[in-house]
Length: 128
Image (cartoon, rainbow, N blue to C red; front, side, top):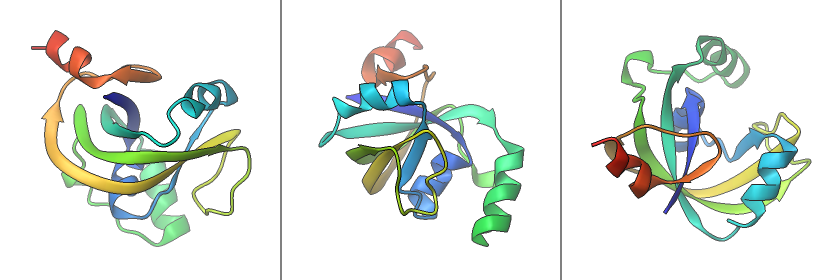
């Protein structure tokens, strides 16, 4: 199954704060179109974007549990439902948005992420 690495706290926000759009480049959006209708893994990257924590807390009034942000592995699944260049969601803020639905947390599966969409099982097995 395909996976997409998302920095924390953005990955957390998909499963806990209603983040329904993942902002990416137009180039990534073209690749995402092939996945419309499919369920993918969300991989929480190892990098923590501390400025984003402050941004989310200020803009959305959501407290981010910093010590609970899992990093370096898969934390859940989502369905890719659309790729858009404008969206009414408060989470849309970019060139292109990958619209997500049905977020479901899974037991944390450690493993290295990659840029772009990647096959999770192959990446995970390569790290064992």
